[in-house]
Image 1: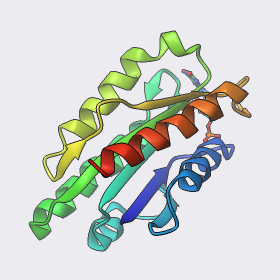
Image 2 (image 1 turned 30 degrees about the vertical axis):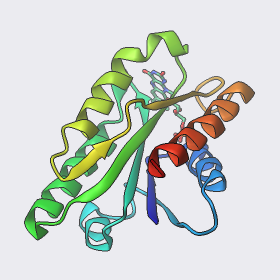
Image 3 (image 1 turned 30 degrees about the horizontal axis):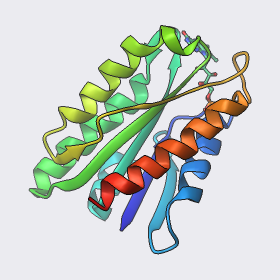
Length: 158
Ligand SMILES: Cc1cc2nc3c(=O)[nH]c(=O)nc-3n(C[C@H](O)[C@H](O)[C@H](O)COP(=O)(O)O)c2cc1C
């Protein structure tokens, strides 16, 4: 399976999370990690991954605006080509306590769910809290990410 994990990272935490998720996918998968600032949505749409994981960060009380824009472009590019991808999910990194980010997570997940060219979206978004503004992650957040990737694996094999 072709898996693409996109990040919008400033201090490297999003990249680290992407690497952690990658580590839980079996070696049979072809996993690519890229940043929305470096690789265009059109490029990834051409590659037609089976699963897109679109990562972002909450900054200035906005939940992954760059990633959401990238996702819209990705969906538009797929529309042009007339080809859908099978699976989608995502993550948001943040500094606020987890119980303060549910609203951001819901809106962000809704963007994925409402992407017409993604056939099936996972029911939950991964959120991961960094210490301070720059990180690193709280250790339990890395555990949560590993469990999340394992759930995704189960979902993909259903
Ligand atoms: C300018 C700025 C504003 C931020 N605002 C918020 C915020 O409103 N809420 C929040 O939870 N975290 C906020 N953060 C923390 C970021 O979420 C955190 O830096 C990011 O998730 C770390 O991931 P990264 O290393 O991949 O960029 C802010 C960080 C910066 C640099």
